[in-house]
Structure formats: C-alpha cells, structure tokens
Image (cartoon, helix red, strand yellow):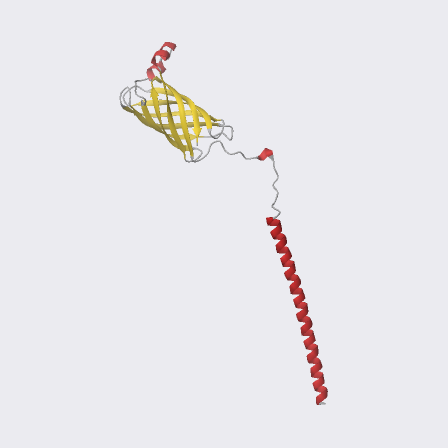
Length: 213
C-alpha cells in the first residue's frame, strides 16, 4: 500500500514538474518573441527618424522672405540738405528762395532697438562758413514698415546745437519716407521744422542714401 502511494506521489510530482517545465518554456518563447518585436519596432523608429527624414514640400507662393527692416539694425545716412528761414517760408518767392536758402549735406548714425523705434545722431554742414560741421543733433525715430513693400514712413523728434553763424540750441520735429531696395541699401526723403533758441525758426529738407548693417 505504501509503495502504491509513493508511486502515485512520484507520478503527481512528475506531472507537476512537466507542467512547470511547459510553462517555463512557453513563457520563455513568448518573452523572446516580445523582445524581438520590441527590437524591430525600435529599429524601425530609428530608421524612420535617422535615415528617412521627412520630406518638405516647396510652395513658392508661401515663401517667407527676410524682412527689409529689422530689429537691432544700424543705419548710416549720407544726405544733402537745404533750409529756409521762417520769414522766407511765409513770403516764398523764386527770388527769395534763390537768395535766402542754405544748401549743404551731412551724415548720421541711427540704431533701431526693434523694427519700429530707434535713436540716432547726425551732423549737418551747410554753406554758413568755412567750418566743416555747422550743427549736430540727436533724435528718436518711429517708423512703420508697410509689409514687405520696402516703404516705411517715419517720424522723429529731438534737439541739438548749432556752432555757426552763432552758437545756439534748438529743438526739432519732422517726418519722412524711406524706400529699401535691399536689406542693406535704401533712399529717404524727409523734412523738419526747427525751433531755434536765438535766431528765427526755419525748415530743413533732406534727401540721401541709407546703408544698413
């Protein structure tokens, strides 16, 4: 009887062992297949992201061209100028224009912190005397670029100091229009009204080239 029971226990133990072995083998096979599938998926993702970059479609109608007017822009101005005193403006005539107008030129630098606002300084040399620089001034500029047309109306205001014919300070305000051929080159035309400290007030017009950096 004991032998029969021992044989039965051994058979049960062998059956359990076989079941355990089958379970372990099946689990190993499933784990191996899962690992292979994950590796294939990872390889496929790596291939797609490294060897097959996404292609970009080109649409010439939606190309974004660089803006002609930029922030952190430095402008160099080279211009010719002409001015008329207030009395001449109020009683304008061909003869007064020829005999009472002053002609000259000058240069200036303006730095734009953003596309719309900048500060600058300039000097002007008119036919007042033999000195090269007749006056110097500083201004705050506000401009409004019109999309990407190259046009930008602007306004400015500031003050300065005149060295000839006599020394005096002055304030001024004006407006103008600039046109950019490229990001580096443009032309401008502006006018201003100058309120002088000692002499009579006068108006000045400028036209010139603007080189940007």
